[in-house]
Length: 61
Image 1 (cartoon, rainbow, N blue to C red):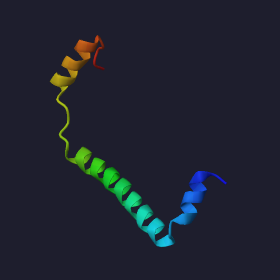
Image 2 (image 1 turned 135 degrees about the vertical axis):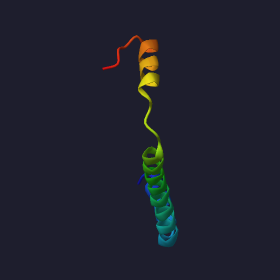
Image 3 (image 1 turned 180 degrees about the vertical axis):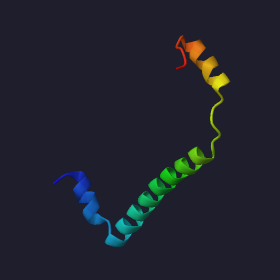
């Protein structure tokens, strides 16, 4: 028996449920927060994109 399985058996089902709820909530907030930030972000101006491409030696299509 692996030590992780041994540890998991010692934790009550209620504590496991709370832990997994918090874990799911955390990932949900991260995903939704990233979506919300990306939705409100203004587009990058072409002038800035051209400047960044020139610095890297690439040409903007």
